[in-house]
Amino acid sequence: MSGRSLTTSPAGSLWPGGRPVWPVTAIGLTSGLAALAVPFLPRVLADPPAPQPVTAVSAPQTGRPAPTSGAAAVTTTTEASPPSGTTTSTTTPAAPPRATTASPVEKPPETEPPETSLPGTRPTRRPTFSPVTIDATAPGNTITGAQALECATCASGSRVGYLAGAASVRVPVPGVEVAGTRTLTIVYESDGPRDLFVSVNGGTPHQLTGLPGRGDWETPATTSLRIELAEGTNTLVFDNPQGPAPDLDRFSIR
Image (cartoon, rainbow, N blue to C red; front, side, top):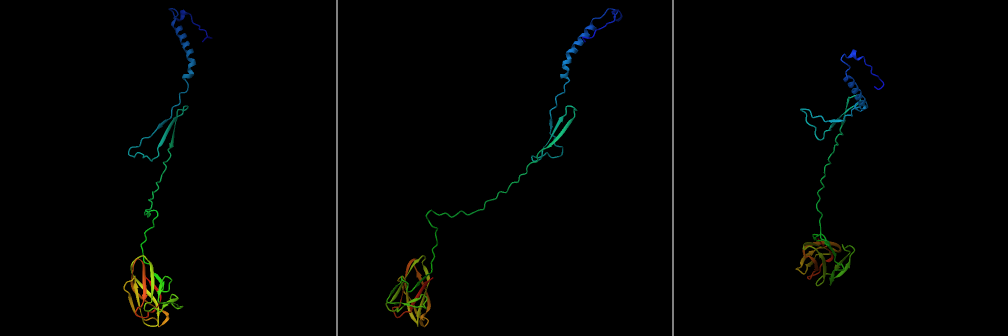
């Protein structure tokens, strides 16, 4: 504007009534405002700010069930491109839910409680009778008025002979845990029929008459009777106050 000159026509030809003042004043004011507005035009015409991404969640359609807590959620993000003004839609699938399998809880096997006992005590054992076998010539026996004889063919390897009158054989039976009726088996040798008396713990004697034997003094024979034993130690006495008795070999109690 400063390098130009304004040339006007003669006033008489343009404005017969005289040159007006307001057109010149308006033109000058307009030029000044234009000069002031030029520096601010780049800021006004600058690119608009980029729009923020918008997240939209689609509502469930009518007639379809709403997604459950285990279903995958879909997130849609819309971004505007500043230069072209177009929008780009990006769909990011959510991570599928992790499937968990519950392990069955095994019930521990039922067990019986262990048996308990007081310290220093032993479990209670039911007492029973134990069979007993005693030789007639055993060291614990008392032989009175008779004689111990060797016998290779006898059951015990020996026998008590010459048992008659006041002679006797006393046999202790210790350690009987249970009292009761037992069977006494006598192994003996005799060359003919002879009698024998048996008493238990000083009671009435049992008389065994006519024991036949095997016809000699080397071959064992047996006879049995029922006797009553007490708990603890018992004593058996064998004799024949009325005459000779068979030779005695071995005793068994069951």
